[in-house]
Image 1 (cartoon, rainbow, N blue to C red):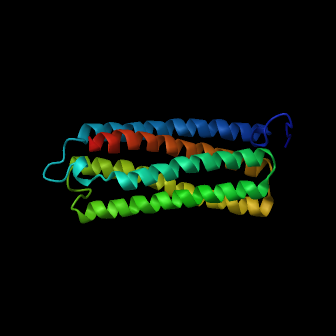
Image 2 (image 1 turned 90 degrees about the vertical axis):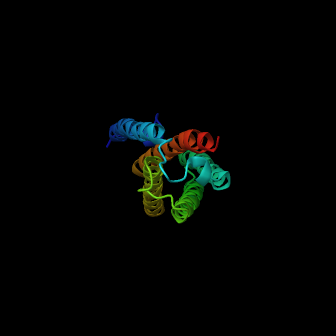
Image 3 (image 1 turned 60 degrees about the horizontal axis):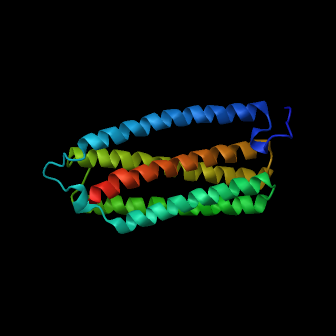
Length: 198
């Protein structure tokens, strides 16, 4: 494995560069998935039948907490990549850990939000609006949950192996994934919650 010292560690081998390119392709497919879910939601948003509408169930407080947590975690994963590029293993692991804790808090708030909706009679079967809402939010939440497991696995690898071309590549790809989830959340915050509260 030939290492190019002139490039950042995550790009330092041809295999690493190919993996990053492949992940960008994967994110293109993810964009198509979420674009489809947003389109379905926007078509179904006013089809709430006898069930509650958005303004009846949405609460801005939890959503603001979720937004703060996820956007802050985007900053901390960026700090982790910065620490990685300077060879600071401990700082890198701390920032990844903080990112995962904020992601876990986000997921916890979302679960509580779902349970509140269900308690108020807003379920997947209640209306087209609610089914599209649950699928959109649930898909994003599932991605966050997967990211928590993935980030945890990377932390274990960093603890055992330290910073090397393989762990740097995995961490960088994970950071792209996490930033993507934050961007999707900005769209959810804007087009689902803010628009729904108007």
